[in-house]
Image 1 (cartoon, rainbow, N blue to C red):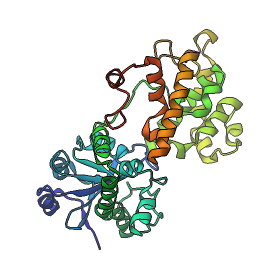
Image 2 (cartoon, helix red, strand yellow; image 1 turned 90 degrees about the vertical axis):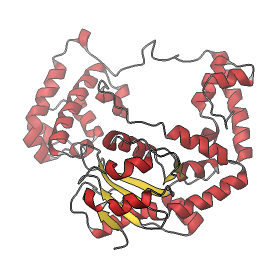
Image 3 (cartoon, rainbow, N blue to C red; image 1 turned 180 degrees about the vertical axis):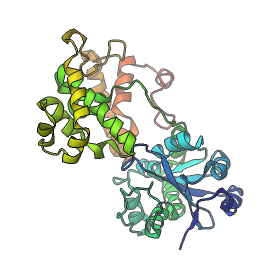
Length: 366
């Protein structure tokens, strides 16, 4: 094997010793959200400065015991790609907050790269082609075959060289400070979960449904969630959103009618269909005056649609932003997002000091 697999804390000493010297190391995480109900941390891949590849089984032991000290040491560069979600996972599942982050996706975006995926960057800058066979693999399965583990190791084993190439490009473009500021902001990302979130807000088609259908859909989503939790399967694998919208809209009268709906798993309909029909009936029993349709933004939930003069100013700001983005060779949204331009237009600052005080722009954008 070209990697070292660690599934016991007592076997992690050699990795801990390598990470203790403060040298840069590459890191990536694998989770199980595409297959499992709980999107838990499953693997952590590490490639050290010496070029050794390690894979830690996060389901077998607490990986924070070996990773937390070097990850939270700001003097130790941690090389990652597209770190946003991994930072959230490490915060939630390993109680760890990375400092010293270097993100190759961020660096590439500041260089104006059109394709920001790791595979595209490795092929362009290093001539390395990554296989995509296990992009949507179930990383919670055990045991994991060697082929899958070697695939996972590829996510870190080339990052040292890629960072070197991108850092050189950033230096030539005079944008190292831009990247450093973006890295530090990204480090503040934390896991956030809203226990009061209405499940229908995660269904795109729900926003245009009548309140009664929304109420039925809400019950159907809760039905699916209970099954997914019990079976530890991703919710969409139990029943996809469009199917539940169809169920809520068509109002099947019995299990047979439910089973006959296009896309419905017959076995699921016959094993859990009665419970779904009972939930749908619960939605039907709600009085019209008590119906909760798709939640809309409350009056105090945001500033609402801006007046015409603010919209006009925002459009003029976009013209300036777009011209600057073209000159710099970077994406318009990377330079300044539209939402930030709108807030700037609302405030209409008259000086750099006022613009800075809004807090919408980072120093490099200012």
